Structures are given as C-alpha cells and as structure tokens.
Image 1: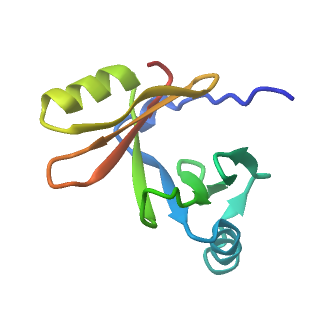
Image 2: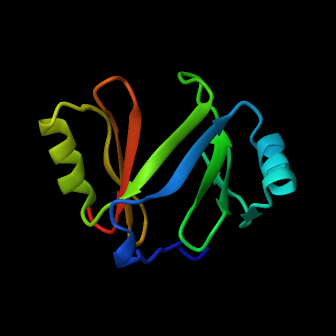
Length: 130
C-alpha cells in the first residue's frame, strides 16, 4: 500500500482548513453530507474502530468523518493550518491551553496536535512539521 502524503498551501496558514467530525454513525453522516451538502469524498481508510471518510467542500477546506471514540461525545473539532505543528502546540500551552494530543505524524507531510483552549474548546493544529 502506498503511504498517503499531503502538501500544504502557504497562503492558508492561520485558516481552519480541516474539520474532524466524530459521529455515532460515520457512514450515515457521510451519506447525509454528500446528499444534503454536496461534499465530495475520497475512498475511506481504516482508523481506530472504523473508517475515516475524508471530504472536501472547496479547494481550500474539508475534513474527515470518523466513528466517535468510547471516551468522547459526538461533535466537530476545527483544525488550523500552521507552519510548524510543534511550535504552535507549544505556544498554545504557554498561552494557557491544556494538552490533549501532542504533535503526531499522520502521513508524510502532515503532523497534527490537539489542545483544549481556555474555556474548554478543542482546537487542532496541522502542519508539515512536528
């Protein structure tokens, strides 16, 4: 199997370019979003206890739909496009965020991290380094 890779767009740094949707029925959510919202999907790939359904709603944004993990509730998490995932993560912690998931390589060229910003809001970071 070929490893997935991604190239970031320089002029989108600071934008929310990916939204992760945790669903109790990922397939039903995927089908609804395709039908009602017109989102296009790539073939799903396995993650955790199910498939991850990558979608696009424009050339600059999209996300993924996955099965809700046992220890979480359904919902959406925005992910911000950053130049350096580790630097953004560490800056967020110094500014008062709580760590949720440290910088982790997802595929070639993509490293993500997750923090809980003051007030309890989850915010993801995604960039080419970590």
